[in-house]
Length: 154
Image (tube, rainbow, N blue to C red; front, side, top):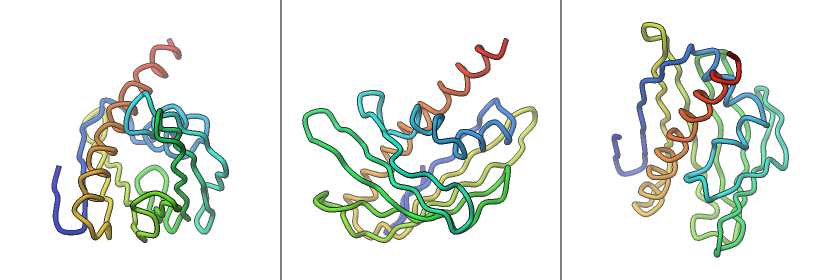
């Protein structure tokens, strides 16, 4: 994990081909199963148009705290290696209005891949800390999802 004044970054070696990792970002039904900071937080995909220029809107249901809405648009989609999208949390969340950007890079590494998620333009230390922890938790869940998908395919 690398942190600077406006960025959170996570790198993870995954034992899965880039195409499988990319698919977890590209399919709404898979996203709902892993793109949360912890298993206790539930994600509902409200809108999902996965294409360059397309947009998304997610509802995070946080036990005891209510719902956090995140929306954005896809600027770059290059299967199976790159995705860039905006990330804006809606009011009333304390981080509402921060115009941040997420870059996902997936590169082949042996029989698996390296996943790098860089969340930039966060601007506030508390937002960097929150999103660093969130992405770490989400990638833990992504790893579990990919394992389950592999076991189900057998």
